[in-house]
Picture 1 (cartoon, rainbow, N blue to C red):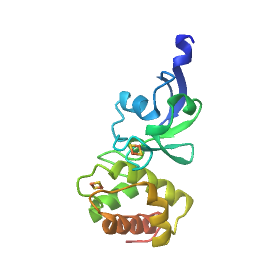
Picture 2: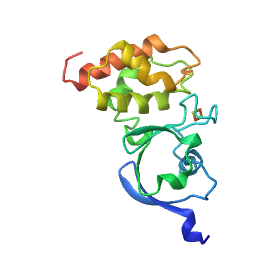
Picture 3: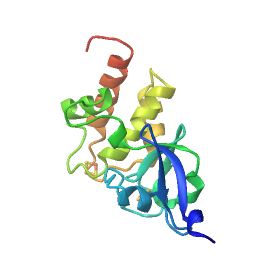
Picture 4: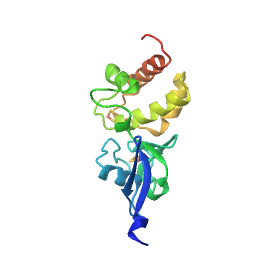
Length: 161
Ligand code: FES
Ligand code: FES
């Protein structure tokens, strides 16, 4: 295998780029090396959702995806969804409703909720719970998270809330 085989070409948060990615490295390891620390490792087994990113239009546990499988894909992390001075609608709703305590799960939650609302602008509470089943909040901030999702969904539909 040549050194060229250790690079992948991706669109990362809107920018075309090449990343070093050894054959055994996970997407999580590669993204964190790029200083994208919003994706975090907790379980490391694809169970908890703290490492969630979008690959194409799929929510992916980046801790169990080999980085080279993302070659040619469009990757979106929480850093691409908003900045401290320009929060996304979902991020702003999480802040307003305090949809977190320690915040460790929050970036993964934001990524998943962002994709949920792209797919389903008016989710029911059951649909929210089902979609977020792969994102665990050990602090139990679920009631506030649900309120944040409702507010973000309403605003994205153009409602004044
Ligand atoms: S760290 Fe990836 S799912 Fe838990
Ligand atoms: S806010 Fe602490 S794990 Fe969710």
